Length: 325
Ligand code: SF4
Ligand code: SF4
Image (cartoon, rainbow, N blue to C red; front, top):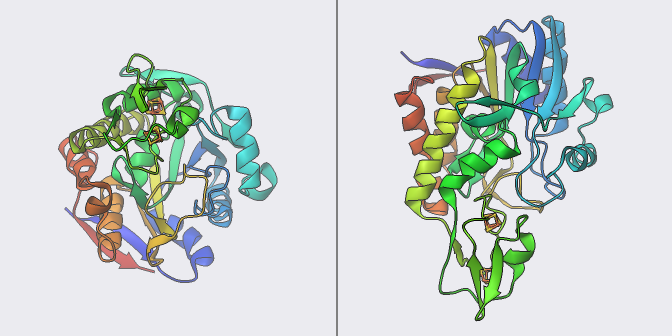
């Protein structure tokens, strides 16, 4: 059966709460609003005003929302809870702007061998706010990526990223930039070329910004990462009866919001879509972006692998009907 996906392309600040109403989810008790608040210097993450509208609507419906994310695994301005809180404030996410607590959780609950944010898992309901865009490892990053990689703790992320450790190609010129970006000092320069110590490497992708494109992750590894993301997503979602998703298809960039720089869009602004089905919303996002940009070609991996795996393990339906607001 086709799942319902709501879509708005204009008047978004007004239509976001209307969309939440239409999804008709019972938000009671503590509601974790999961948002990637952007790396320092990133300007294409979900805009705070939209998250505030979600927070206000959840309160109106009787829930107690708080805005939450987990520290990043790679080296940067979000790799500890303290640094991430400061970055979130610069990017516009504060208690005052959100009208709710902003929490960066570095505690974990172990689920199926993967550490997941304890504060998310201890919540009564989950609202997943995602930025739909390209992603170097999974081709597309949306709700599945936001839950499957965004809800795990740093330890959990290390377990997941373990499937996509990179290799160094012959075009490496030994400049050392990647070594400087590696949080665990897994890269050294030997004989004019980067060498990765796989005992230390956590597969975080922090070295992927190589200007020579010499850091490489194979298509097979990227596909496996997508399957793992879907499975971890299932572990998280099994904890909740009430979950809703919004994907913002605005400022659709080639890379994710972990990139702390300005990035040009690869597609025009499309709007926001919402659903109670995580598979339907990501499939609809891929289809809508796919009218303007070939995500599979851009990152050398088919982003639909995560959709196929999610359908296979019963997370939702790839069939959807778009309802315009
Ligand atoms: S892999 Fe890239 S960033 Fe690292 S040393 Fe080689 S050229 Fe420099
Ligand atoms: S070598 Fe491994 S741990 Fe270091 S930045 Fe690259 S992927 Fe991350």
